[in-house]
Each structure stands twice: as structure tokens, then as C-alpha cells.
Image (cartoon, rainbow, N blue to C red; front, side, top):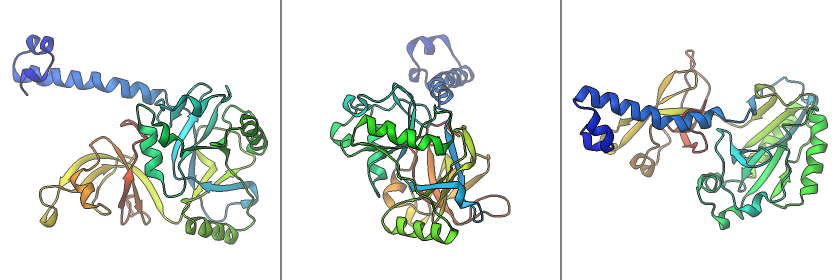
Amino acid sequence: MASSAYPSSVGSYFSGSTLRRRACLALLVLAALPLQARAAEAPALLLAQVYRAGLPLQDYWVSEKYDGVRAYWDGHRLRTRGGETIAVPAWFTAGWPATPLDGELWAGRGRFGHAQSTVRQQQPDDAAWRAMRFMVFDLPGDPGTFDERLPALQAAVARLGRPWVQAVPQQRVATDAALQALLARTVRAGGEGLMLHRGASLYRAGRSDDLLKLKTHEDAEARVVAHLPGKGRHAGRMGALLVEMPSGQRFRLGAGWSDADRDHPPPVGSWVTYRYRGLQAGGLPRFASYLRVRADLPPGAP
């Protein structure tokens, strides 16, 4: 790498290829520090496990799983799951309470792309935010059980009186057959799936059976490690991604790509969501297929 690629003070100080490589590495480490700092500030959120048949459904509240961007109101600002501040128009959060709210920034069924692009803007697009809703599903600062937090949440949203801030509707489902029927109706109507929240649970960060997700397909996130070259019709552009699961296992993600995706693949270090059909004996996904970029997750996110 030529010294002209560095600031003049760095280029004049280091000489020789080895020293230049060390300088480049040092600059890359320094450049990564803000991302690490943002990741360290990530809110401690309740995260979902996957639903398993046979759980006592009478213990759970059931709601739609909204296909949006997870957002945490800390009493002063909206933040992503990774901890980054979301730029919103002043009117969107005007009058919001000083107590934390956990929810989903949602643009409606089938409009994940609009939600994600709106949340990513450094300068808020007022017209785009007019189509957004904050679907509140929990009160992280409330010490009660979810059974007790739910009426408090509904009352807080009602007091706020903002039509774009809504309490997520919750219902009880008695049997697994009824749950599966509700899932089928939700998906036919364009929904992503269902969430189940244990009524007796406190708000605790991390994954547990207190919160469960149920969808017609399995999906997960993986970090992009490398772009693998294409062959045949895809020669000269991306053929597959080499991705890494949070467990550290790596695999090729070669299905589900459009020609436009192959021409402009997700950058190395970014996170993508993929669908799959169960796991192999070694823990790798079977029949994995690319779904979308997770632009709301920073490079160091788990």
C-alpha cells in the first residue's frame, strides 16, 4: 500500500512495507473503536427463543410478530438493538415518557424494506416517518410480571395519545392446534409470525422461554466473511457469500440471490438473515437461502 493512502503525518513517520502494514492495521483498529463503543452501549433486551410444541400455552400471551426494526426508547432517545441512536423527526417522539419502552418500528405488513431504510437515515425523512409506527410490546423498567406490565403498558400508550405509538394487541390461545391456526391466518394476511410471552415472567435480558417466536420457516443471522466468485452465468460477480454464525461455524450462502444482489452484495462485516430447513448433524443449516441484509445490526453485534 502506498504511503499516500495514509494521512501525511502517518506516511512521513513510517517507512518500509512492514511498517506501513503495521500502520494500516493500527488505523483500522482505531477506526473500529467507535463501533465497539456503540456495541458496548447496546440496551439489555429480552430476546426470543424458538417455540416448541408441548409448552403450556395457558401460561402465555400471544401477539403478531412484526416485521420491522427492534427499537428501545430509553426515556430520552430511540436506539437500535445494537445501541445506535436512531435519527427521528422531533414530532415522532415528542411527549414520550421518561420510562423505557421496548417495541418495533414498523411500516406495515410486507414493508420491512421501508422500515429499515427509514431507520438507517442519518437525517430523518419526514415523509418516510409518517408511514412508521412504534409498536410497543413491553416496559423494561417495570418490576412486575408481564401479566402486570401489560395493563400498565396499555395505559401508558393511551395516555401518550399518539396514533403512531400503539400497544401490541395480546391474546390467549388454549391449544397448539388453535395456535397453528392463528399462525396460518396471520401469515396468509401478510404477517411474519407470532410471539409468545410468558405472563408470569419478569423483564430479564437475554434469551429464555419467557419469550418465544413462532414462524412457518426458520431463519437466523450470520456475518459476511467473504465474497466468493461466481462461475458460468455469474462469472465476474459474486457467486456466494462465506458467512459465519454466532457459534463461529462458517458456510457458503449461495441460494436466494437476485442478479442485482450478486452485482452489489452485502459488504464484508455486515449481517444477513437467511432461511433454512433444520440443521445438519454438525449444526450447520440445511438448504440455507439468503433473505435480506440486517442493516440495523452493527458489525460487532452478536
